[in-house]
Length: 182
Picture 1 (cartoon, helix red, strand yellow):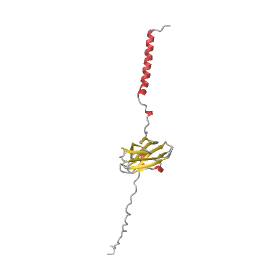
Picture 2 (cartoon, one colour):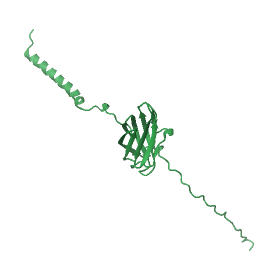
Picture 3 (cartoon, rainbow, N blue to C red):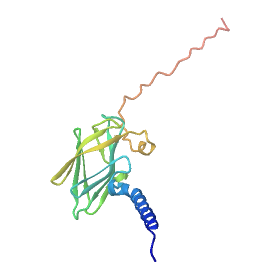
Picture 4 (tube, rainbow, N blue to C red):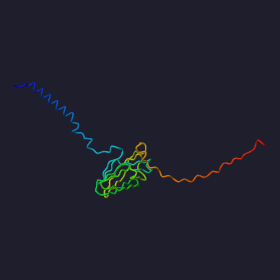
């Protein structure tokens, strides 16, 4: 049986239209970068790697640029030996030893780590040198304050200052006068 040329042209046009539709619907994925292939910090802290140490969601919580700040986040050691980690910024250094194949979660009270000064005001990024063994890297760590309720409990409280003991005031004296008898 012979196929008429008219039907062949129609079939070719329909097949071409289907191919263009298929390309149009999948073509964007072919040229655009896939978001799921990028590692990023889904929270307020940073993600960085220095040697065998991975910084995960690391940030500093402080009242202001000149007050004490508390480090939050987690550091993970992927090596089979303990690692000394130091973070230095704005003249303040925090040092911890991360156990072999272990991690330190700074939110835990037993791992509470503070710095004298965060090096930046809340809402800004502090320049910090992260040193692990012989390797170091410059990272920018966000500084937050207690505005967000999830961080307010982590703000370092200033040490109480000693004040002079209150002076005892003399007991009031009352003089009774007898005006009725006068």
